[in-house]
Amino acid sequence: MRRRYASANVMATQERIPAGAGLPPVAEIAAVAEDATEQIRARGYWELAWLRFKRDKVAIAGGFTIVFLFLLSFVGAPIARLLLGHGPDIPFINGLDSKTFNPVGPWTHFTNVNAFTHKTEHVFFLLGASDGLGRDEFLRLLYGGQASLEVAIGATLVTMLIGVVMGSIAGYYGGWIDMIVSRMTELVMAFPILLFVIALAAVAGQSLNNITLGFLGKGVFTLVVVFGVFGWYYPARIVRAQVLSLREKEFVEAARMIGSSDARIIRSHLLPHLVPPIIVLATITVAQYILAEAGLSFLGIGIQEPTPSWGNMLSYAPQYYTQQPWLMLWPGLLVLLTTLAFNLLGDGLRDALDPRGAAH
Image (tube, rainbow, N blue to C red; front, side, top):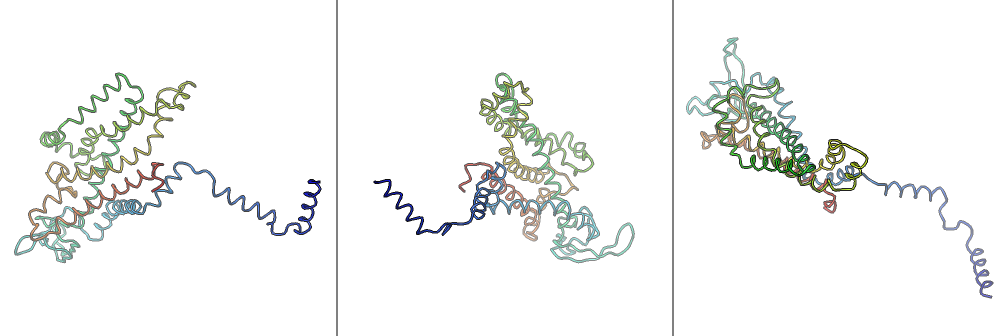
């Protein structure tokens, strides 16, 4: 009886609702299903990191600032030199005030007699003179950016290369190898690097500063080597800690079981997992080395004259800080802007590459 009643209800319902009434066609259902599949498709680690990074407007601004500074220093400097008609190391007697003998101020025009051609030429200082020699502040800022960025980038590459290799070996093999690397790390940490740089500058500074490798500024190679040799301990400790936790993972054990060599395991299975912390650490290290170069050059033991850098330009500023305060403003502002841009970029990359930062 119940079955008959249920069948009668179903038949009555079918009679009241025409076939296909209120239901989408088959093609529309397939399109919606396809769109849903597109929306929920799996994304890789780097794609998710990029999506998180794009949401960080401050980090994006830091990245654009870094690109702008590189273009300004390495592309804009030669163009500005060509347009202005003089180099950053050329002294001008008219670049000094005739009464006070202080460097002239911004937006200064004067005529100069070329010592070689004996022709009168028009000279324009956009930001005034940089020091008591009457050299162009604007050009020296641009070329000083080349030296500062070359030191920071070169030293970071050397530091990360040595640190990653030493940390990977120590963390993977452990035992006596880890003990030797750890003792070397502690020795480098305790080494008085400032005293070493002062002694090196006094003993072999001139000969080392002349090593340019054909494309570096004078003195850049020396600072790159010193910073790289004495700065690798920090990335080495970070990489060692990461490798210690990774070497016991299942994928490493599986690689050992199929006969992969230790070098292949480190290169193909461990290093890819170390890329995110290495990238973040590298951006922060660049900022630290820009400040270190500026400090050493300010003390007179970094980039030597006549090669300009932001640090040795700041060393002239205290002589004129009451008459021409802009001599401290421009190089100091560029150092601040560059280090801030790299730090902001590093913070953004850290949040983007850390999956736990997705909620931010």
